[in-house]
Length: 153
Image (tube, rainbow, N blue to C red):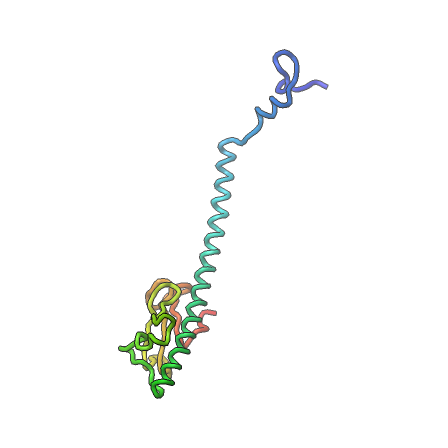
């Protein structure tokens, strides 16, 4: 069996080690293709993870609204069935919150508070304007309202 010239030295002997060194490694094009594939995969993962963070923030905000409603009930019990007025806002019940601080939604924005409520026959309303901090919106930017916590599910 004749050994290919690639493995043959000038003195006629062969060297597999030398042949492996000459063919080892990747070309620049192969490296660029691998980097492009990794970049595409990372983009897909980042988009999916970002959406999950938004979902988690929305759920956390809903839980916070429920907790605020519990604090409002305690306030109302202590104040003969009255809730803080819109002008007093949630700040009127600071002592009912941990560290006596009015909480913010999970997007880092203040909750809106209205009393009496403007939708239906609710004594109050607590609203988060969502991720964008603007009224309305869809998905993560949609408002989260105490009277309709299951909206968008």
